[in-house]
Image (cartoon, rainbow, N blue to C red; front, side, top):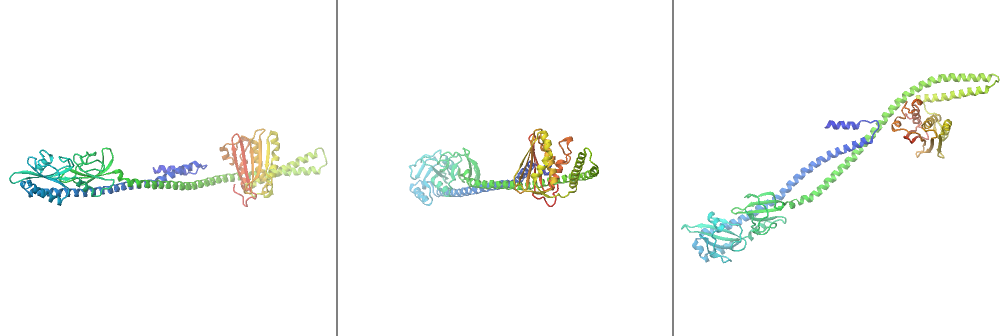
Length: 573
């Protein structure tokens, strides 16, 4: 994987022939994605770990109050029922059947019992046949028949029994504590007391129920033994599947029959068939987390946004500097290559100039000798014609010497022959060399010279050569009847701008890319490919710039900028 990434980035970081912005946009995008991924991934992992730890802590914090509440209620309820069951058992074993059948004795015992313990409703003595032979309380239940009642059967079997809540003969919810005794004489009987269930509800509520928590008692059949805040009144059927019986306090997640998530703490009361439950909806448990989650999410998203923004700006800055460095590197490589070509052409030009100067000297010497002989001879027919022809030869030789001199100057990097001159005047003078050829082809040469243009310090002969090459190329590019426009204006920095525009066939981007290279020509056998190369070198030595803008089928514009004063040292071409 790392080798693939290295290969990819190595490909992106190679110095291209022409620096493409798309390459750096791709590099910036990939580096931004990698940096964001590297920065955000640990943040995501840390957020996930913190979330899991927070949820675990939150669950424990919610379980602990439920657990403590059930444990406290269990202790209170078991103490309440245990004390009363033990007291009733003590009475049953302290008094005989005959003692308790005496209503005064039974009434005295019951009043003493109520004075010590709250919650007792009435008391009765039941014989072995299930008939209540003695009773004290607010109801007329003496001689009531309890034969076959579950609580009586359980008491006869177990000796002591605490019943579930039921209506019975009283018609209101109550619990029974029954103690069965067998005397030495063999007589069997059962002492029965009734407990008001409202006492149980007060005991459950006394532990301090939270507003979103419900606590209640129910039996193994799912019948409520006390009123429930969520699930109904006493003796209603509980709409909840009961958890398995456990005498240890247990807290676990649960679901009611409607699918609502709950947190349930439960335990069974010792000596009874009753289970104590505390229920808290999970939605209420996670309210603190829900409130905190929005804030954490906002902070998390804000953090990611800042990471993305900083990564984008940082990568934009770094890749921008890399792109600028590559552009400079490409320019330096191109300049080195151009200088190497220029050096080769310079050596070639020096050799050619040297070889041409020798025959030119002979031609000039012979022409001068011929002129001297003609001047010394007498008059004869067409003497003046011969003299003018020889003078033309000398003039042409002198012009050729100037060209070879400039060629040698190009080869030797000779300093320009500086003088003040008017660029429009040089342009007009250069146009004179091309007017006849343009007129013969019907090509229109238009001029647009701004008024008040300042003179510049430059080399007149070299500027003429530059303008002559560019105008010549423009004339070659336009068809018969075409047009060439020449404009000169002043730039904001004080220099002059010369534009030569034609409506010829134009050039492709590939041609423009190589136009200043030596021996590159589109004229096939008509050109040698040195014109624009030499033109570029002259313009650079004079401290100027030259650019070409062309569209195939529409034409070409060559722009030359010239400083008012050339640099002290010639600029390397």
